[in-house]
Image 1 (spheres, rainbow, N blue to C red):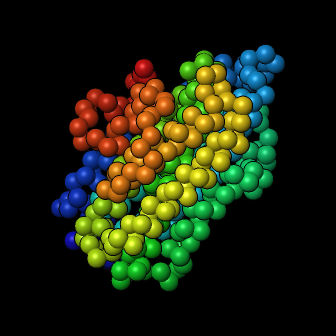
Image 2 (spheres, rainbow, N blue to C red):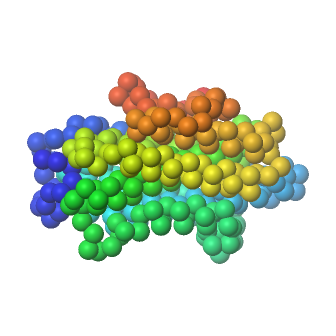
Amino acid sequence: MPIINNSKTDPNKILPITYPWAREYYRAGVNNNWVPEEVSMQKDVEQWKSDSVLSKTERRLILWNLGFFSTAESLTANNIVLAVYNHVTNPEARQYLLRQGFEEAIHTDTFIYCCDTLGLDPDEIYNMYLTIPSIKEKDDFVVELTKSVFDPTFTTEGSENVQKFLCDLIGYYVIMEGIFFYAGFAMMLALKRQNKMVGIGEQFEYIMRDESLHLAFGCDLIKTIRKENPEVWTQTFCDHVVDLVKKAVELEQRYARDACPEGLLGINADRFSDYVEYVADRRLERLDLPKVYNRENPFPWMSQATDLAKEKNFFETRVTEYQSAAALTWD
């Protein structure tokens, strides 16, 4: 039974399992379960209220990242529920999509928790996708890329439509979750390394752990569709995917320079831009496409903090690496 183009309304018959990898992602997601209220925000509140701990640049950076992620997570959730689940008809893959939808809800709730705890203006935070050009450009890019898939008459029948669906998956899994999130994560974890806003930093670490699974699942989903529909993976289409990634890198670099124009301790906007290029090459490799930038990782501590390598070597990891948030410890 192929992973797309089957009945969309039959009972979700998990057994017999056709794609064991999809089931493994579901189980790993369950083992990673957490909620934002498990993370203490007391120190964050004290630092946010203090006039001496956070610089103006750091406060701006925090607000911008909360603004971007608060809407980006909801866009991703909408795509799962309204588009991807509708067209991925395999039961065990759908089971993971349900789990991912729950995790996106947890992530969205995390930003509500952060805003409420710090006493931030929700209108300011949740309207940044309209008021901050470099945030709006990123959101608009992904939404435009996937617009056709949201058409209620869209189907995945035929090579052209399969390619459109693959663009949707690449747009959200590879570009939104795999590239657009990463400069923001690096910024927030750089603050945490300085013992600033450690509660938010810890929640970003939990979110990043979830996202590494989302990204890996999405890439395996793309590869499975490609394997079952080899005629769609043309050189022209591959070139188009590379162009999309290059455009995404430009948008994320623009955001990085806008969000952190003066840099943080020992880290400047150029290094964030280098990191985005390094990450983009990782994403291209994951899709069996050639690297573009050949950039070294300027933030090796990010691999430790977010377990970035797990996305590429998921099945080589030990079961003990996946555990409940209450038992999780970070290096």
